[in-house]
Image 1 (cartoon, one colour):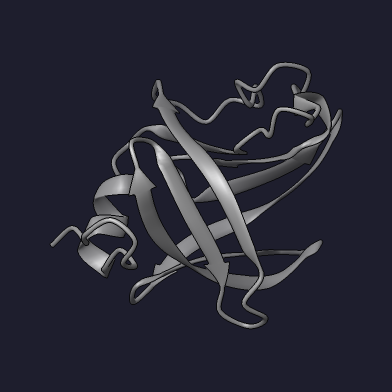
Image 2 (cartoon, one colour; image 1 turned 60 degrees about the horizontal axis):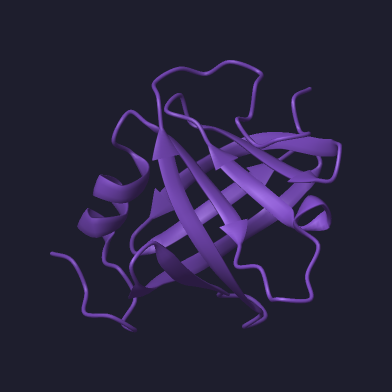
Length: 125
């Protein structure tokens, strides 16, 4: 069941959002003074692989759901699990369960496939 705005998504809502066969992109909401190119972006591919980029560099790993948490991990990524709270429209607040750090992210989805092209300008590897 989907959660109300501001409440964490449950496991079923997370599955519908992240495990639907589409590439799912999370990009920090840009403040007026921000520079989009240097913001961390994340890509969740349908095959369970994960990519985190900053500028022209990135690291890869895997992702999965643990109950009502979205988790990422990999050789260069310490395991990180986050709660996902809808904020309205395509905006979500991600809260790290280990340290309570927060990130306001915009979600978009497109295409099927698992190519090396992240779909985020300036971040193909």
